[in-house]
Image (cartoon, rainbow, N blue to C red; front, side, top):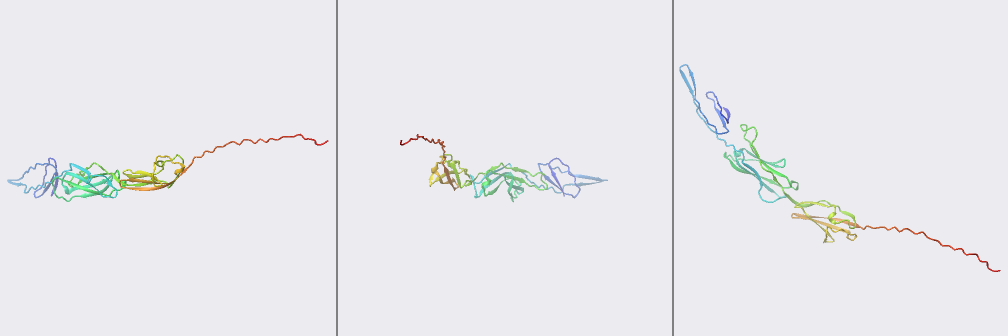
Length: 273
């Protein structure tokens, strides 16, 4: 049995009794030719006994696209589903889908559908998001693995990227447990504290249980414990700082005046004759 790929005009010669197998990659017209052999006054003719066509439709996808199964952002720790839609591909049984997060392969899927005609199929990828996934790009890649008789380069179509937006609770990046400053030179929004979260959290400062204006400078009378409430739609976190406000004292130096000592000399008086 002789396998032959037929995609352009080709003359195939075989011996009597041999079989030839042709893989048709395009529309091909088959012309059957009888071979005659003359030996002396005798003629021998060979004809095609059986011609069988195996039709294999190969179609690379028209489109490959990624979308969210349900609208809205991802939430840290909650499963999120992405869908890769692949349109008009055949044969589906030879299709392999790969999922990528940035440049890392995160999953893959093969299909069992034996239908040889072009089909619309999809693949689903489940994500359990972490805050570090925020801004990552997800792609799906559709490959047709046609085996040893297929093209040397695997036909591949890649989707446009889907950018992940991950929401997560606030957290404190850095904040001192105590802080000392000079009177009128510190407000609470100037404190070296930072927090993260998505959506970006709001920060409110409390002193003695009361909400304060965090942009107002502190005086020596504002020394004490302050608590920050950091909040977004997913939750809140708090931290406390002991604030010490020192007064700015000005020392006036008064020069000491010299002490003057006054003395007097009285003449000696002679008493008596």
